[in-house]
Image 1 (tube, rainbow, N blue to C red):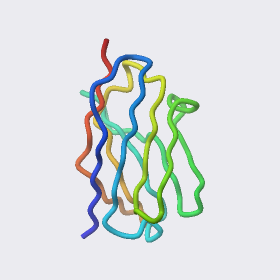
Image 2: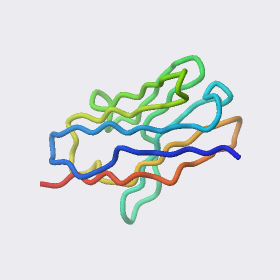
Image 3: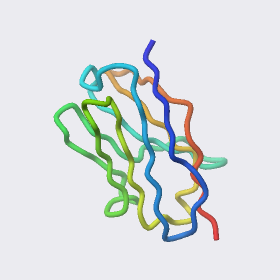
Length: 115
């Protein structure tokens, strides 16, 4: 069973930074991509960023220029560096591993942006 564990969430002021980490129980190259999604209270889960097996990255428009996804192949870890955080970035952030059409999900980590 694939396991993903996120960490690094917390409370931060607007304009601040956080770095989320996701450790995958298997070789990350076994998957088509590793992704970050988020779910704000009362809203549906939405895509945030992804990195595919070839290293190509993709971001949702609201986070472009502020968030950076990266990976450490040797550690089977994927990171999400979040800068210039805004109030609307508040959400539970989930890491996922995608293979074909199937997603494996972590339990999520809370990010709260508040003054």
